[in-house]
Length: 288
Image 1 (cartoon, rainbow, N blue to C red):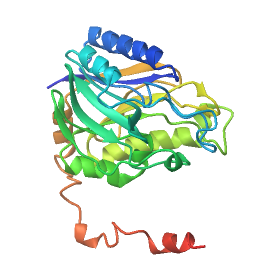
Image 2 (image 1 turned 180 degrees about the horizontal axis):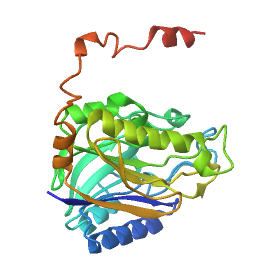
Image 3 (image 1 turned 45 degrees about the vertical axis):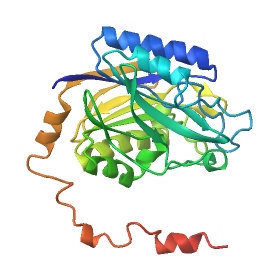
Image 4 (image 1 turned 30 degrees about the vertical axis):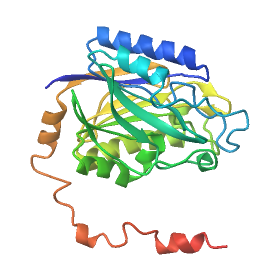
């Protein structure tokens, strides 16, 4: 089935109502363009952190109920479009970086960010699972920005049958070694590298959305894209806001990629000793 797929690069701040209005406008625009799968950045409702070295120095983003009115409004607006997006989720006193996939008034899948970058762990709880789920456009999996740094994240979703990985991000330029131009920033290179590698090694489609602009000390990269199962970029934006759109049949693309080489089936799991344990040298390195 041909699916018009779109990844968005855009700026979303701390004003929840303004972010919600912008999201609803993008969803409507995407529907008018015939988009059937739309992936928005992380933290579109309430924005992201403003400083990774001093997390919460200027206050944390507003946290929302995962079943609250904001998520419901996006779900209700997503008529005929599968929409994935990220936000800060609250449950009691705990908060998570979370993502949700919605369509036609329903929540189809959820994910809480497992891998936390820099100081996030001091303020946010970590998720504990990667699970694929079925949607009108096929079986999908969700990752949130830093999750895609770890090959095991995408591999777990691919083994659970996901043919499309949707990755909302709030991925900034380097905070320690910032380049004069975003295109030359090492995080810019890594962002693109991880997108291509996770798609190619699992032979799946990856839809990568990201924030743009500046929040506090963070300058976000943009670079939204759709990547094919061979690691080839099918459509992309630059560092400014935009929408990368492509028509493709994910199931057919995956079948074609796996026609000769079948990475998931050709694994030699018995040789991956210690895969689920911390590396011995790393454990020693953190001892006091």
